Image 1 (tube, rainbow over the protein chains, first blue to last red):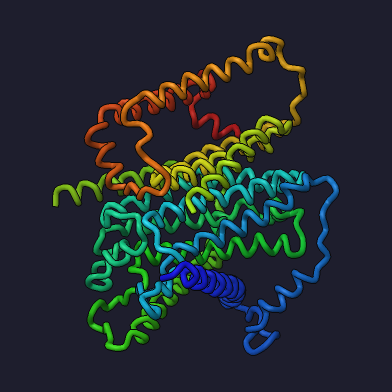
Image 2 (spheres, rainbow over the protein chains, first blue to last red):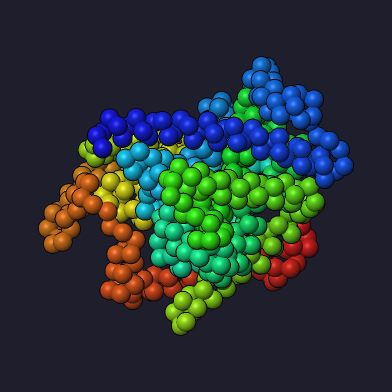
Amino acid sequence: MTLLAFFLWNLAKVIVVTVILLLGVAYTVLLERKLVGRIQNRWGPNRVGPFGLLQPLVDGAKSFLKEDLIPTAVYRPLYLLAPILSLGCALISIGVIPFGIPHAGPGGVDLFEISDVHIGLLIILGVTSMGVYGIALAGWSSNNKYSLLGSLRSSAQLVSYELALGLSLVGVVLRTGSFSLRDIVEHQATRGIVTWNIFGGLQILGFFIYLMAAYAETNRCPFDLPEAESELTGGYHTEYSSMKFAMFFMAEYANMINVGCVATLLFLGGWTSPFGDLIGPFQSGLVNALLSLFWFVIKVFAFLCLYVWVRGTLPRFRYDQLMNFGWRWLLPLAIFNIVGTSLWYAFR
Amino acid sequence: MHVILFALFAVFCLAGAINLLVQTHPINSALSLIVVMTSLAVMYLLLGAEFLAAAQVIVYAGAVMVLFTFVIMLLNAGREERTRGSSVARTIGLPAVVVILAVLATIILHVQGLGNTSLGQGITTTEELSTVLFHELLLPFEVTSVLILIAILGAVALARVEGSSPDDAERTGQ
């Protein structure tokens, strides 16, 4: 492939994936409002468009058109940098995520992945750990007590749960022997659901640790203390308005989608079908490609629904409970999971 | 391509390092340090050390620097005061830097086996790295981990208030 073709393909992939991700973010917000509405026995947004389907567009337009207030006492450079950093980090990690079968495009182009790297998993972890700065700086530069408290909580929470998050993935890496997300998926895809990492790889404990640590990492209920509105009025984004506020929200939902993608890839067999070779591979390459995309999207969607379900049903933790849970339960369990998995693969 | 990237991130790295010294506010200095560390990660990647690059971002830029900014935010540290600096530093500072650089350069140029990696030469996989680390260098690796453990225990012992158990601290409000 020539350099020009390479450049054009990648540019096209980046644009398409980013647009789809941002649309996904918008409709995840709608999904959340709808589902939480039904859980609380009300309808949720249903006035704009059929079934309220145009609500995200209207919300976006409203955010754009609102007056952008910048308080006078903020530290301007960092105040402006923080939402960009937050959203940027949330959007970057989609770049290494494979959504479908490799080499699906004409001439063997990887249509469903922006870039295939050896250390995809580590890149996702690294980008996630950089995302903290957006929230931390937002709270600090706002020059507001509530914002500062929110971002302090958030930094402490992210640093604590990042350990458990990272350690919960070691079992998967032990089984595959690779950091490449594509290798990880292909290794667990041999016999459908039976060989998925969550069951066949005996990583069901790792999966639940990942799930809980990921909820804390994305500041979602029941770990949404950084923006606990009953205590902090809004947390780290109290002083933000208009599109800057919306950027923090988009970052949060983009992170939810990322977490869903990573969980799908690492534990739930990625783009492969749960029935293994019972259904397909078909003769037509197009059908195979679309089917792989379908399975990936359906798994991520199920994950997002789980997120909303948890938000609709669980109350918020107290702060000391949060720290106790992270350090006294999740971390030892993750270490136990690593030791157990290592022993299994060493002596089986 | 490699040379362009190297030059770009070398400039970032040096600019971050100079900014770190020039800035008076601790949080700006901390952020400059993050720039330096991430630029270093790109350098490692250009030299083919992909695991080291990822570890640099996750551990240094992600975890260590978060703690730095966390402490700065928690203490609400204000601007530094500008001083004229000590006269000793002004007189022997520059010569000392030159001497240290000269010594380092001599050592690097004379030691065998150093400097046989060049830009864009190919990637050292994580497997190769771990083979070296856990076969040939196992003893130093384990000794280092014991050292880190001792440091952690020391930090806990120092931070603990005399005569109080962790449960007391919890009851009196974190």
